[in-house]
Image (tube, one colour):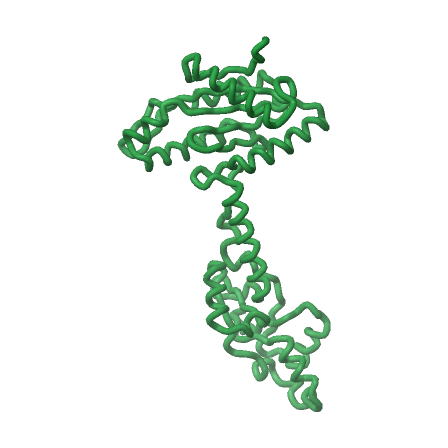
Length: 316
């Protein structure tokens, strides 16, 4: 899909869950110490009861420091881990949101950045995560959000001009290596301004979103549909000969003039003018390719709208 915004898959703590083996509450203190010695990556170990529900946590640093003292192993080594565990760990359901657990950690205290928190599903132990995992994920999400703001149209979710130019540059490079043709479709909606004037900008925005969805449905997964702004859109068709581009243009013309239904409002006055240009046949540079497709679009609009035009040089 073109829209690479944040999705719901990684919005809960289940995404952060690590499969840290839990120990039963009857496990001896010395056995838990051995687990820490065997696996240096363990920052904490959860403790569960017979129903596999968490009842406590053992934090590596505090625990190993305690057993470094003289005679501690002899005095407490055989005792059950319940005598040494923290009986009040942070326990959250797997559906807890990332932002929610961040607030919980901040409210609970900085020490939980290291000890982490226990994640449950249906009240049973699922896994663990620590504060550093949380910070890393929040940083990743923030970067992804900023990338989305910089590279995607916030109304339609399509790539904006910045990302379009980047993808077109990459497509041209790939075309040069493989000697494959690229087709560029420059699309301008016909009859969009009256929609804003008559129905208001809210309906106009809904219509643009619907146009974006229809454009996505007309192209292959590897192709790109982008919004330049206003009611202008551009499509990059990879490895596409002119015949294929014309077929896609006709498909777009048909789908865009199909009636738009918004509640009780039916809008059937929308169509499109499309300009088609090929790389490298019509232009051998990025900016000239865009200009060629743009020029062809104006030819289509001048010739009556609701049609496409293929770029031709003035001398042709």
